[in-house]
Length: 185
Image (cartoon, rainbow, N blue to C red; front, side):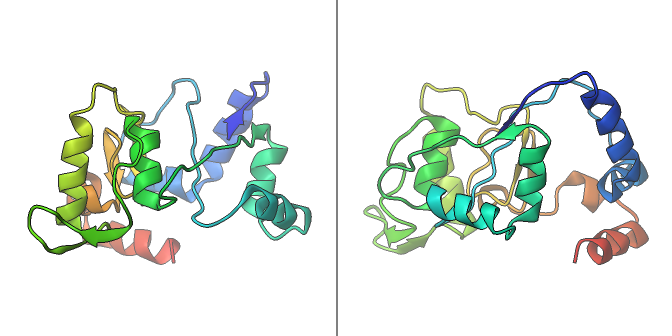
């Protein structure tokens, strides 16, 4: 999805951020606020075809995405390639390497062990191999949330290749972590 620019966007964004619980947590954690131009947002929904997505939007089954489209974001086609698995698709999107893995789980030729891409060790090893490609990772300087790979992102959360809470939550007082969990259930 991409967003078209209008003169009201900066003001609407400021008002939305003022009301946003995510923005309140950013302030409480003492994190810097981003004031630059909007970037790229990729929303990946595993196993959802374009026709099924459009059908769900027409039947009001995906209100969040419907609101994004109403705010000027656009849908774009993407061919996932083969194998059509999350790690293979993200390897191609983030690093420009097609067929990064043969499947979501597979037998490693070097060790003979069964590898599952939701495990941190194998995800880190595959990502290290992907980083050796000549391409600059797509998410360099950006953020990655709940992806198999980091894609070069500076801010990474809940990705097997970089599993952990991340510096902001590790250094936060316990009551803020408790509120964060409570408000995001």
